[in-house]
Image (cartoon, rainbow, N blue to C red; front, top):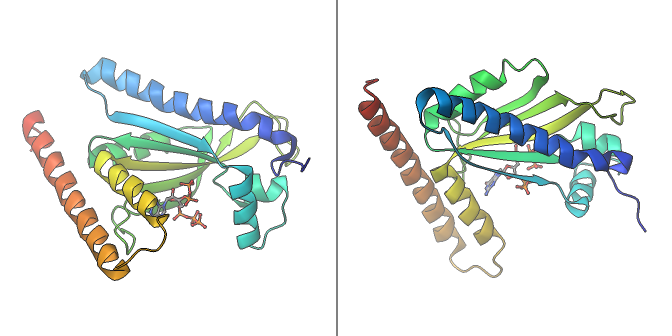
Length: 205
Ligand code: 0O2
């Protein structure tokens, strides 16, 4: 049998993922206790499959080793946090920046700088201190996690666009690309309106 690209460290990835999810759930629970409402709508997560990680390493010209999969590439563990309102994303970011055991190594604001196809989301890649050994030889290891912060609207667009991308033999591709972009921009406008409605209800504007 082929050896795992994650080596012996693959056994810790599920625990890393669970600890990240718990961190967000705890923050949201505390927020609910204080304000009586949730900011997080839902959380989804995945460990990148062996196949997908091998393919990505090859595509990037990296050797198929745990070091490439767990340190050079930063998305072996992925957590997607979906919020009801845009402002909550930036509030959560400020909180994340204060965690003493998390260090942001890469940050991409695809909300202010949406991708050309209309994709919106805030991506951060964090290095997290964990109570497990890592492939760099540390007993108290460091693991990379990609966190995507989005609204419900951004998430629904990305899910549908992802499904459509894998459909074969698409006719009128140009039209579909421009329609998808139009939908993304309309949803972004809705996000702004929903935020304004919330702020009006809260009396903050
Ligand atoms: P999965 O299974 O979702 O993880 P890469 O593109 O991975 O070589 P990079 O710089 O890490 O390089 O990519 P980026 O743009 O920071 O983030 C990649 C991830 O963001 C993707 O993961 C998607 O989850 C999401 N994403 C980025 N662009 C789009 C897009 O145009 N549409 C959709 N639906 N999702 C997007 P993976 O690896 O594709 O898969």
